[in-house]
Image 1 (cartoon, rainbow, N blue to C red):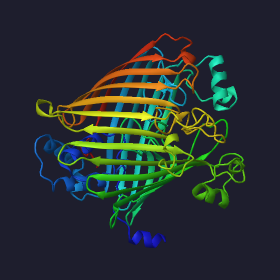
Image 2 (spheres, one colour):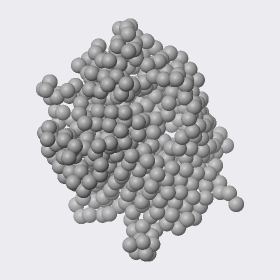
Image 3 (cartoon, rainbow, N blue to C red):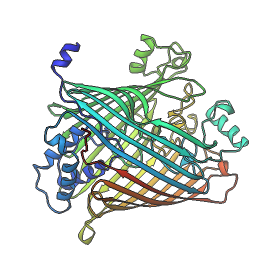
Image 4 (spheres, rainbow, N blue to C red):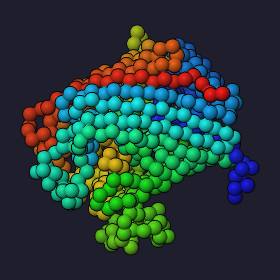
Length: 523
């Protein structure tokens, strides 16, 4: 098998981190040009995938802002477009300082998050900072990617003992096992996306830490986001798609990972599978599934592995250790670029313990959105995105409130190191968001966002609301230095956490600088 794989190997290409600026540029360019993008709901993409997307864009008639977006991607992925395969590259070096005045939220498993989808980085009330670097090497079919950073976080006030008791009852765990915010100052050295891998046939196999984004939305991904710290996993994807009649281009994403910091049932594993079809240039449909299984007292056996894939039973007998198929979730999503106008519609959905959200929509969760890539007339340099998310159940009260992202066996929930793996709308919440970006250039922009999030009082005593307004800007100096500045004001009413029905406020401000060496390579 090794000799056969080597004979069919193709040049390895590392994955572009999910927080890279190129994704926003590629999405806007795809909507403006009508070119078929890579799979929006299956990120990260490899550098070679970005290059193939640029090649498709070159076949489309472009004008106005689309031309500038294309040139920015051509500069970034010039080595891949020119066929350069063997490289040793310093990709980035960065630092960010974050100051938070007031008490922020950092518990989307119960309440919400002030800073979401940030690789599980800790933060608290006061001064917080990260500093890191990333680089990669590619040699024939083999690849190595490393991203590491130092993280400093100020201390964070946690819930009162009485509130912890309430949460313990809701989660059905001991008070000492409740996963929630709070703790002293932190100083950590962490690896983020770090892996080794090889490519063969149409596939790429990797082993290490990975961040994934399984969804077309930007505010959250129902089944897998980069909200938690990257998970140690083995992953297999066909970065070169298959083409099947009627179904179009088909891509797969498969992984096995090890979850951390689960005090109730320690050392569980997670596996996930996703398949996405692009039957038309403007349409994408995806189906996904994840299962949390194994852990202490549930060792790996063929029967347990088989049940995690094929068992659809949802009775009490299925939760017995010898029969337990694991904590199963299924997802479905779509995106559609509307004809003749620069608008795309999309939606993400998932269901807990159902083969598909379509089977029981009343107990499923949804995250729809619309993206207008270019406003008309004199506002042509601006876009507009509106999204909503909904995890509150509409089923009878026999189903426990907050059952999304929770399980009667795996009561530490759908988390890694205490942070939700899915959408930070949480277990029983409603969110809507509006965001607009003024594109000064493909790399220089100003963005304003408003978000409103609500936690059901049936789930958390007294319920809660979270409102924030954010303004941020990114601009590039001398082609290689990117500066990011931002401020966010947040209003929180969370009686169980704060002990009062009066609103509390916090203000966050951040400044970051990133060095992007333009294809710099050491001698």
